[in-house]
Length: 289
Image 1 (cartoon, one colour):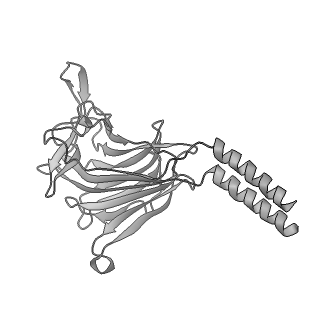
Image 2: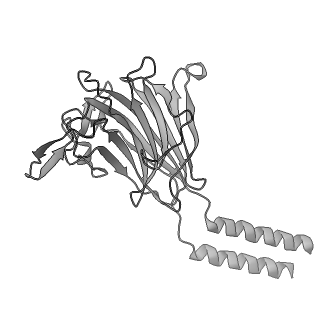
């Protein structure tokens, strides 16, 4: 009887295994912009799109290769809040890690206008899940203040004490966002190269941040440029003579960024849970026998 029960259970499990679709594994992608021409737009790469018809983005030299940039290097954007979006296929994953280096600085002379920059993770439907913004303030010391939001930058602030000093304007720093879609939480960290005896260590400054929405599929991460002055405008036209309104009050600020990596780790499937449950049932029957 025990042998027949074991054979029956294994047969049922084999049917489930045979009918279950193959699952995707972990994935990892990295964008560094060295392959783009020096006069290219980031959006020349088909993986990137922008909401700004004026295309205020491009590449800029750095000591090792090139970085991407977003902001007021040339003129104002066609939107008050610009999203420069890198899409990806989340596959069958529930934990995502986003890492990048960035430098928020004045493009030329300091005009005193402090636009803010940051990053938003979006769903496949374009919904804003979480946002990490950097307030470009004029203070001594750490004058880039980080602020986290559930959803868009207009969402609920989840940052302890409202804002946290993380780095200085004009210096390169490495950041990380970790999103767990099962727990529906996210964290943000800064890499401190001087920590751990000079070996460096990640220092988390947002823990268990709330995510907006549920039942979503992660689909992209966007570099964000949000204007301080959202009222000053002028009219112009695109190269195809399409008329546009430019928000000409944009500050001469840009966010340079490089080595953007996106990785995903798969969650346990319902099949795995079914398998564990069936084995537990079989073990219980064997003990009772």
